[in-house]
Structure formats: structure tokens, C-alpha cells
Length: 92
Image (cartoon, rainbow, N blue to C red):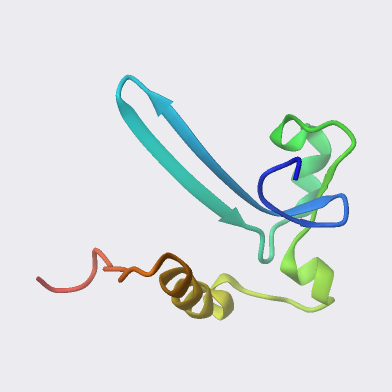
């Protein structure tokens, strides 16, 4: 608090959001793994003046690819939300 997302000090590592319009709800999550952070120099990320953006790669000082965090992230998501995720690539 008071801001949503996952923060490392004054820098956002993960953004989460929900949008509702015309009886349609969409939601999303953006975890910065190896993001080119220079793009954020041209905008006010999430509309928050004076706050920065960071990535796992930047914080850990080594390259962290999405495929390195995807499985553990999805496993944790299922555990926290007590659900089973189904991939659109799964047969049936």
C-alpha cells in the first residue's frame, strides 16, 4: 500500500490491474523479468510520478528470462488461488 503491484523500494517490479467496461471485465499481470527499462524513461509508469520500474534481471544482477520464472510462478499462482490452470495448448 498505497499502490498496487509488487514493489522493490520505490520501483515497481510487477504490475497488476483490472479494467471493467460495458459489462466486460479484463485483468492482467506484468512481471518484469528481463525488460528493457529504458522505455520507461519516456513515460510516467502507471501514472505514478516519482516512482520507477525495475526487473528481476536488474535486481538480481543477472539475466532472468521469462521461461526461467514461468513454471514456478504458475505453480505459486495455483497454490495461492487454490485453482488448476489449464493451457489453451492442452488437448481436450
